Amino acid sequence: MSKRNWPASFAHPRFWPAWMAIGAMRASAWLPWRLKLAIGRGLGMLAWWAVPRRRHIVDTNLRLSFPELGENERDRLVRETFKANGIGILETATGWCRDPKHLRHRVTYKGRHHMERAQAQGKGVLIVGIHFSTLDLGGALHSLYFPSDVVYRPHNNPLFDRFMTRARSRIFGEAIDRHDLRGVVRRIKAGHIVWYSPDQDFGRDVSVFAPLFGVEAATIRLTAKIARMTGAPVVPLMFHRNPDDRTYTIECRPPLEDFPSGDEVRDATLVNAFIEEAIRKHPEQYMWLHRRFKTRPEGEPGFY
Figure 1 (tube, one colour):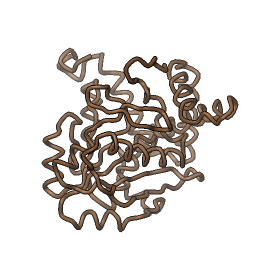
Figure 2 (figure 1 turned 60 degrees about the vertical axis):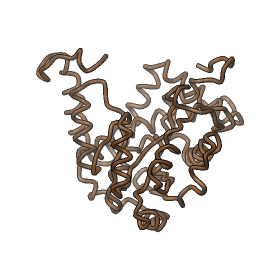
Figure 3 (figure 1 turned 90 degrees about the vertical axis):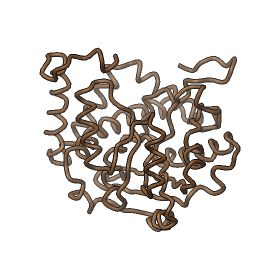
Figure 4 (figure 1 turned 45 degrees about the vertical axis):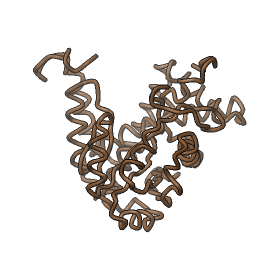
């Protein structure tokens, strides 16, 4: 539903569910850590039970990406994925509603010198991020080390979109609509770091097919286009919740070499290789709930 079809006043009853969700997120951000984990896991398992369509999508993604797993192993990973993404809701609430400084002692930053060197070139920096369940908390914690802008997808509900955008604008220097290419280029050319996550399927028109876990995946061309338009180094960045469920690791990699190369498939393959490497470290933390392999090469049947 487009935003213009929503009521003009946020007091309208149609916005009450969004108000309740916002209130719940604000309250949950202040809960004790163990309680957050327990609630998050519970929400994840509730979704696993209540939304079989999403369970099917996660199972299909994992079957395609990890064909070596037996059925029992894959079922376990499906459940762990829902639990991790449930925890991610509480982590997002924490990142949006609290000052991230209170979690700085929980973060280890690896490869920080790569970002410093890229920033020192004076051309701005394009971060290649990934849609892990920890994404918004990761952005908040990364901002403690390197102030950054973020490219995001607006929410369909205008009240929740306002809440989300204000929260991200507090964390990041600027929250940029994903359709605002000029805004992204302008901020990078002004010397800013911009966080961009190119790991979703946006359809054939804006993508090329490149391998991801050995499967041809529609991969957006925009990463290379932004790099070409700005001349900025493209820095891969991953963020994970550690196995102790209490600490986090930010890992910055060296800028992609010979990028963009002028070969769109080669560039997309290079980006996907990093994304795959990051996912393999903690596959349960990835947002497998979206149909990553939805768009297929001409004549190939769909997976979902």
